[in-house]
Amino acid sequence: MARITAGIGTSHVPAIGAAIDHDKTQEDYWKPLFDGYMPAQEYVEKNTPDVAILVYNDHASAFSLELISTFLLGVADYFPPADEGYGPRQVPGVEGHPELAWHLAESLILDEFDMAIANEMPVDHGLTVPLSITCGQPDAWPFKVIPLCVNVIQYPQPTGKRCFKLGQAIRKAVESFPEDLNVAIYGTGGMSHQLQGERAGLINADFDTAFLDDLTANVDRLVNIGHMEYLRESGSEGIEMIMWLIMRGALGEQAKEIYRHYHVPASNTGAGLIVLEAA
Amino acid sequence: MDKNYHDIPGTYVFDGTQNRAGYHLNMFCKSLDVEANRDAFRNDPDVYLDRYPMTAEQRKAIEDRDWLGMLQLGGNIYYTFKIAIFDQVSMQAVGGMMSNMTEEEFRQMMVNGGRSVEGNRSKSEGN
Image (cartoon, one colour):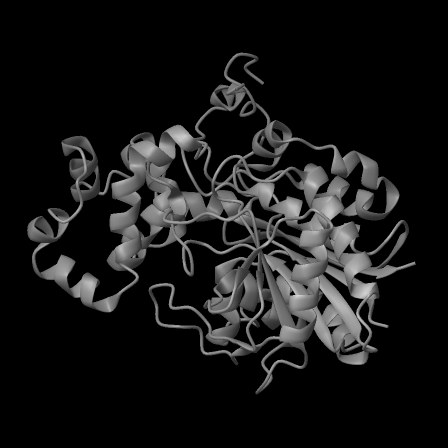
C-alpha cells in the first residue's frame, strides 16, 4: 500500500529560484533565508520519498485566460520547465508518476472531486522552486513528482475548506494504491504578499506565524478562513496559502511539526517553510 | 454575489468583471511569452498592438507603462508583469510605481518588514 508520510509547506517565490540559479544564496540579502532551508534539505535527503504530490499554481505560464481549471492533475511521465520570459530555468526536467497520477485522478473523480487532467504541460517556478528549496541543485530530482495545479489567480479561488477536503480525499486515494510507495505532499505558495496595486508590498508576519502554528494546533481555524480574510489580512496573493491546506488535509487528523523557518523578505514575500509528518 | 472585496484599499481583485474587461489586454501580455512575438512587438509596437482588440484606454495604459491603470482596466498582475519582464524591469520597481515609491524605497520597505496591514485593511473602517 502507498502511504503519505510527510508534508512540506513552502513559499515558491521566483526570486528564490533565481538566487539559487545565479549563485547568490550566500549574499547578505539571501543568506538568512537559505541557511534556514538547510534543515529541510537534510530532512528530505534522509527521508527521500518515492513520489511527491506537489500542489502549486501556474502563473500564466502553461495556462492562460483561455482555460481556467480549479484543480488539475498532471498525469504525464515528464514535465519540462516553462519559459517564463527569461528562458526556461536551468533545472532538471520533472519526471512524473503516471500510474499513481491516474489512480489519483480516477479515485478523486469517483469521490466527487472533479479534477481536470493534463497530459502535456510545462511547469513554472511554482513547481520547480519548491524542489530547489528542498533538494538543492541535483543533476536529477531525487523523486518523481505529480503536479497538482490549483487556480489561485482568478477569483473565486477554491475555498480553503474545499482544499482541505481534497487533501483528505488524496490521502484516501493514495492509501488505495496497491504498490508500496512512500509519498510526500507539498503545499506551496504564500505566505503573505501582495504584488499589485497601491497596497503592493503588504506583509503580515503575525498572520503567517499564526498560520504556521495552527497547521498543528488548530487546523479548524485555518480551514474556515474565507476569501475576504486572506485578501485583507495576507494580501491579494496571500490566498495561495489555501494550497497548504491540501497538503495538511492529506496528512490525516493529527500532524507533527518537525521543522519550520520564516523570513521576511524574499523579494516581496513573507517566506515560510514547514515540515510536517503524519502523526 | 457579495463583492465586499472592493472595500480593501489599493487592491484589484481579478474577478469575472475584470476578466471580461481585461481579456484582450491580458492575452496581449501572455503573447509575450513567445520570442517571435517579443521581436514583433519590439520592432513595431503599433502594428503588434493592432492584433489585440483593446480599448483606447487599455492601449494607452500599455504604451505609457501605466501599471496601475492596466490593473484598473482589467489587467492581472501575473499578465501585466510579462511587460515588465519584456522591459527588464523588476517586480519591486513595478511595486514602487504602483504605490508612488522609487524602486530603492520599495526594496527598503520590504527589507524593513514590508507594508504594514495596519491602516490598510478597509476603506470603510479606515483600519
